[in-house]
Image 1 (cartoon, rainbow, N blue to C red):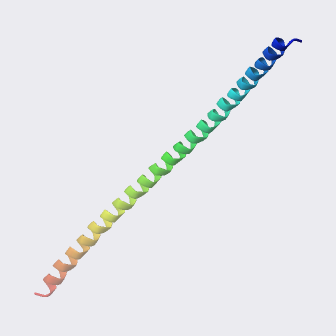
Image 2 (cartoon, one colour; image 1 turned 120 degrees about the vertical axis):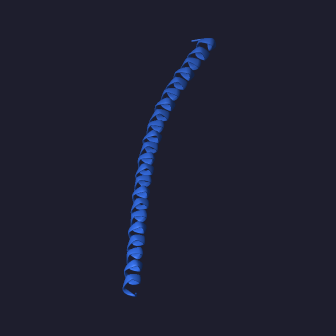
Image 3 (cartoon, helix red, strand yellow; image 1 turned 90 degrees about the vertical axis):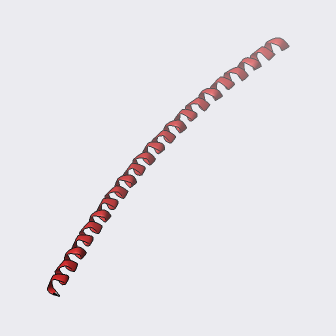
Length: 84
């Protein structure tokens, strides 16, 4: 084998190794992308749950305020009627 054939052989080997490296890089990148997408979906679901819980607590708070206000108003009317 002369020197030019040796160079061509080495260049082909480098090319093939580079292709293998690129293929592995693409595979790992795809796996990471899928993992990140899964994490984003999980975060979105958790965020939606927290929003729904906040809404429920807010409604419960407003209902409590309404009932408390109604009870206070009823007691004031009752006590003012009995004090006459």
